[in-house]
Amino acid sequence: DVKVTQSSRYLVKRTGEKVFLECVQDMDHENMFWYRQDPGLGLRLIYFSYDVKMKEKGDIPEGYSVSREKKERFSLILESASTNQTSMYLCASRLGGANEKLFFGSGTQLSVL
Amino acid sequence: AQTVTQSQPEMSVQEAETVTLSCTYDTSESDYYLFWYKQPPSRQMILVIRQEAYKQQNATENRFSVNFQKAAKSFSLKISDSQLGDAAMYFCAYRGIQGAQKLVFGQGTRLTINP
Image (cartoon, rainbow over all chains, first blue to last red):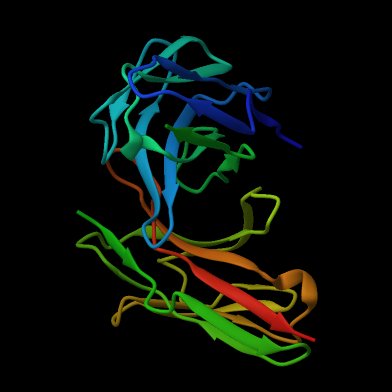
């Protein structure tokens, strides 16, 4: 089965730090996504990518950027972490096509102090 | 923009009973896909069931079935013979076939199974 790996399960950072969240998938998927999950709000899309070096803003991109230099890796960057970015971050990937299944990583719980 | 609403933040059911989780959505598209995902305490999102809007027949996967009402824009999940392993957060999600094809999620429903 497809494996989507997020580099950290838990992360604690200080306000103002630059934070990198890494995501790697092993099945040559074109599409990769970053979501954040907050209680009562569900999952909200931050950024997604259709291919290497391509990126599209999701619904809540402010305060975030992304990098996709290789097909298998999609990084989420918090340029200057703030306390309101404390959240669960989920990475996902899939092949092209709207009916294709989305595969998720296990999430990174980020706390910004 | 498409929206997905789950109006039940929490639900509970006795083991072996049946429970229905509600989901409504808003879209101007005529063709799209709907999904139910399960997130157990391990945090790993698991696809439970998928429905294509152009299919009138409701999708079924073992103990899980949906009631898809396209005109009412309703997509509820029925879990029969509930088991302790069904305890999780359940998310309803929508994806159109045009444009970005991004997955839009509802707020989630936390399901508790009482032994």
